[in-house]
Length: 182
Image (cartoon, rainbow, N blue to C red):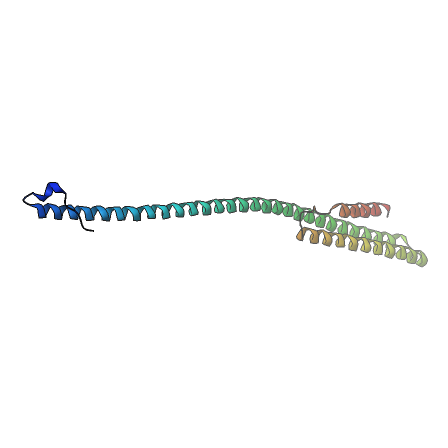
């Protein structure tokens, strides 16, 4: 870009030097303006990038919040499963105690039958009754084991439903009532 020397410089003895200096200054000013425009574009680009980054940060924060909520739900589900497995373990322990009691009762009944029954027909009748009792106990034990297995399956596939223990408790109560009648 050519620079026009002002009239005040035209009659100066070192006119050419002053014009050259003014022309160089004009180049520097032009370059500075060019840099300033580039900086302005750069600032606009930075502003756009900052805005984009802010939007990304908001998305990340939302994702983190959603993940925290999911984690809390998973922790609740985990606690429910732990309680369910504890209930299953208690039910299994109760079942094992009942089976042991039933076996002990059967052994005692066998001893009583062996000691008290002297006649062959009486022994045969008592044995038949004992076999039916044993079969009833076996059926009840099978039912209790099936209930326990069902409880285990329910606990494994837990999907927001409470584990069923009422039926197992009812079966255990019926078993105890039956045991008391025998």
